[in-house]
Image 1 (cartoon, rainbow, N blue to C red):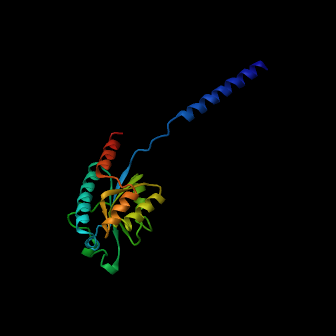
Image 2 (tube, rainbow, N blue to C red):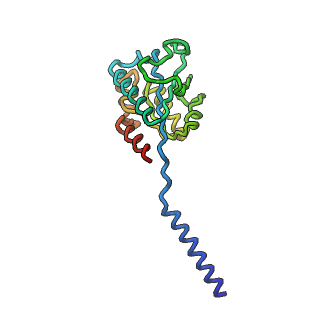
Length: 199
């Protein structure tokens, strides 16, 4: 009987130590696997943006594409199909300006809704590339960028809008979206990608 009690006490101590060890363990940190979503910067829609805002945003977008490439992170092109405005494949209005350094092998998503995830392969493409985080740039801050940001959240991605790299027909609205959704700066993204490289 005495041996049985000792064994039970030792067993209880063993269980308690294991439980304590599990409670004290830090949760595993997930490594950043980022993708850049370039949204609707098509010739059909860019003229609707205020000139200064467009100049700034396009400058940042071009630099962001180079930054993500330098860290081997996917650059995903998203296009809005809209026959009424002439934005359909095969038409120059559908395309991005020639100055945007996208490549033909960058994944290309064509959407008919504001949300780039709605009835497209965007989620599948991101999963195939192992991405858990998306950074959004392009237009419109109050339309397709915002809708795609919500879609990313709904698909369990960490999603961030990029300050100075989104635009809308009203600059004040763009600023409000950047403030409300804590848009991140180029420098922060650069730091995050560099830190992720070193893991």
